[in-house]
Image 1: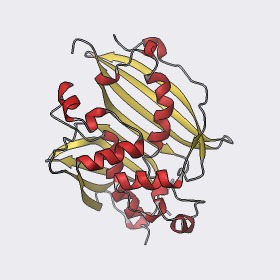
Image 2: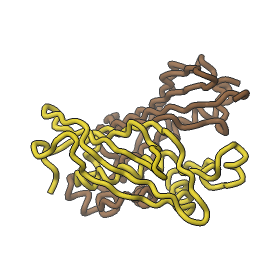
Image 3: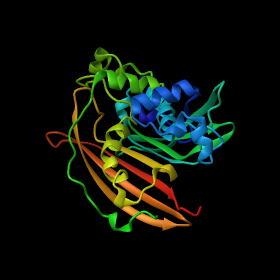
Image 4: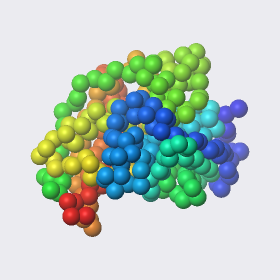
Length: 140
Length: 149
């Protein structure tokens, strides 16, 4: 059932998930997105430019975070505006994986435009990696 | 070298159309863990009223970055990509991108500013269907570290 604006309240949690990201996923994202910056797959290059190691694409993290909103609303095409600032990188270990946690809460409701603003708290290892991460969703 | 402030306000001519394919959308959806069936299953997308499988909300970055390359790969702009950090990103969607779209992008350089040893470059990629229908706008800010920082 698609959510109805009148049934929602500001502050209500509408979804949460944990997403694992390993080096293979970054290579996959690089191929699918065309972003082949070596800081996302080459440890030597990443450390030479002063990073702790390979880091996830900020755009991967942003893309992974919004899935919880698309699934909640039942139509990914209902996300009409989506924005974030990139607060800190997500280091991706090898071997192993990093875990990104996403919590989605209603930030605002607009009865005139029949939209809900969903605020996403996106963290890795307990620290926020995306800031002001907001998706505006058109409701039925 | 700092980013060239004279590039602020620049608008590029429309680029060559970007053809959106089903398998590309499926691969992108898989990579970001977008599991909604409207990204992969044509029938599921049509049940929601779309002509074909639709893109996840951030796929528009793939279309936008092809236009952004006109600026980033221009040596006169002075953007050293090894010193770039992505600062922010915003997508405004007039409708979802779907397989079969042929998308034309006009790149605008909205701002070039300096602060605390960083050059901040804000671009806006305005994406339309070939016939002119507005599809999306992608605003992106890159922070470029100076040589001495």
